[in-house]
Image 1 (cartoon, rainbow, N blue to C red):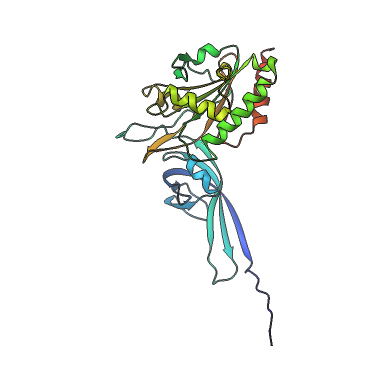
Image 2 (image 1 turned 60 degrees about the vertical axis):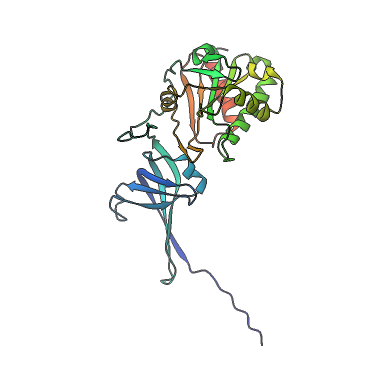
Length: 287
C-alpha cells in the first residue's frame, strides 16, 4: 500500500537589526566580508567576524576600510535540529576608504560627493589623444562615470556604459538638450586604456564608427599620478588584483556652474534618473 505524507519546513523566526561596521577584508567569490562591527545591543558586542552579504554582487562594490550600514538578518528555526542562518542585506557605504599606494600605513576617510561641492579642474587625455579638462565643459550639464574597458562584471562597467549609450541616444534625439549636455566616461586603468583602446571601446559600446559620437560623449583617462586624487574626490575605490581591478561605481551629475548636482554610488540608478537630473540642472540655470 502506497502512503503519502506532506513534509513542511519547520517554522522560522526572522529578526532584523540595524548594523554598522568597517570592512576588514572581502571575498568576492564567496560573497562575504570580514567586518569589524559595532555593538549590537542584545545580540553581540563589537567584534570582527565573517558575514555573508546578499545579494552577493554587492561585495564587489566594497573595499577594505569602507564604513557601512546594513540590515543584519537572523533566521532562527523553531525546530531545535535546524540550523540558524544570518546575513547582511541593504548594505550602504557611509564612508569610503581612500585608495592608498602600497605600503601605506592605514586608510583615510574618502570624500563623499555632495550637491554644491565645487568640482576641481581635473585634466585627462581623451580617445583622440587630446588633453581635456573638466573646466572646459562649464555651461553644460556634465555626466561623469568611471569605467575600465576590460571590466568583466556585467553589473558594473558594462551596465553603466550601456546606460550612458542610451542616454547619449536620447540626448541625440533632442537637439535642444544635446546642445547643453555632455557625457564623459573616465577610465581608472591608465596603463592599459590608451587613447586607441578607449576609441575602439567607444565605437564598440555605442555601436557606431561615426566620430560625431565624441561631440557628445568622450572617453578619457587621467595620468596615473592624478588618478588617486580624482578617484578620491568622486568617491571611487579601486584595487588591482591578479590583472583585474576590484572597484565600486561612481556616477556624478555636474551642473553648468561646475558644482555637483547629484552623485550616485553603485549601479542602481536608471537612465530616466540621469535624464531628469540633467533636465532639472538645466532648468535651474534657465537653459
